[in-house]
Image (cartoon, rainbow, N blue to C red; front, side, top):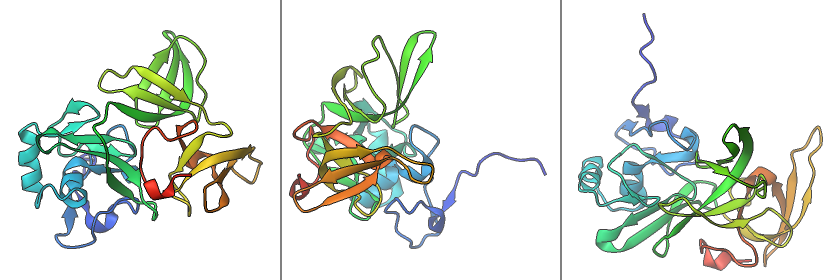
Length: 241
């Protein structure tokens, strides 16, 4: 038989462990469409509205809310119920004056956190590519930006105005800056960078961080810079370094 392409549905037990999808009936859950985030690191918008925010009781109610153009994601109105929502995406509901940001909780699962009205979004620089138009920054949320100067390094964070996508500030990955841990046993922690350890043939590059409670090491790709001396956004106030 001919291949018919990727399946449009997904069973609940197949949902990523990084998501908070409940393992319950019915058997199937909405599947996020292909987009800026990897499918195991994102949730479809309708699931976020229903299971994480509690704005809707059913997927049908979530669709109605979206069709009424009452949801803004990263500064733009969206009606796409399967839009993948991942780490650091910001969601606004102007009709009820509520604003949220997607983060990782202490169990390493995607969770929603209420925040102030967002005017910017944080994006991590994953890598850089030279194109015929100039230097291109490839960001963690699927965005690509052309810049004139090579003053941004991999691992740093850009503070972008939304929806204009203008660079407001740049936070490099360097000693003294404050970071958020996105994976490992310290997921969800906020701490200051103490030092960085180069990788070896048998070990990935590490970062040494220190919070008010302890000092620990984690993989460099788990470190997301939030700011210099203080975080540019508040996620877990009780965990501030």
